[in-house]
Length: 212
Image (cartoon, rainbow, N blue to C red; front, side, top):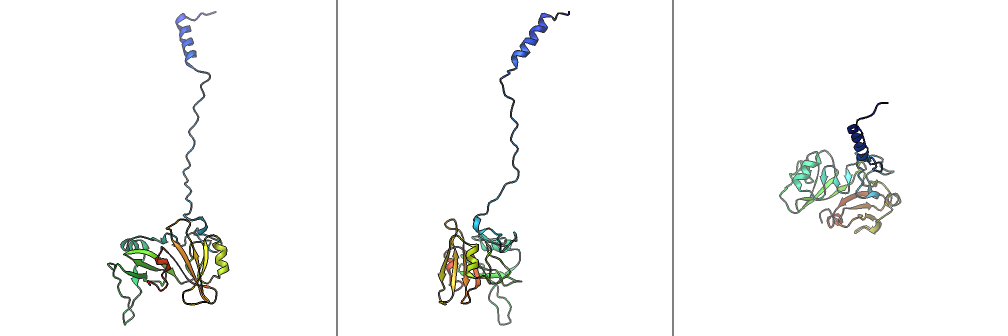
């Protein structure tokens, strides 16, 4: 039998003592979730709905396309994506240029389309209006729908009110989840169907006669 040198026995003993049997092994770092879920600003007014299964509708509670509510006129023009023009025309039918230095209220629209109509006041985007069936409102409402169809889409925070001029007409006003956020107003005619809708901030969303 071979005998280990005393120095070797001491080294083995020290190595054994340096290991703690009760020390737990280091737990592996939890894997980071690289996918960050983004919840809509207002869950019951999400862009998609049973009536609008698309996920790319440009109409949102915070703006339209690249134009954000509250943005300055220069940012609205650059972010919208297509040239914008005023609603007025000259005697020949050509659009009159809009004065971006105007602090008052006026509308802009895309050169190649009638909608949306962007309300500018104080040189900022404060509201947009839609009259066509081709654009779907946040939450799924659109021109041509009945009050009952709208109430199915907006079961919460939707109030029915009268029209200022037509006693047979109505408005469905969808209140925001948070104070100060945008409001949706659906205008229903005497036939009981939506003729137009708008999204905007107060008080401008409540202007009845355009800028008045």
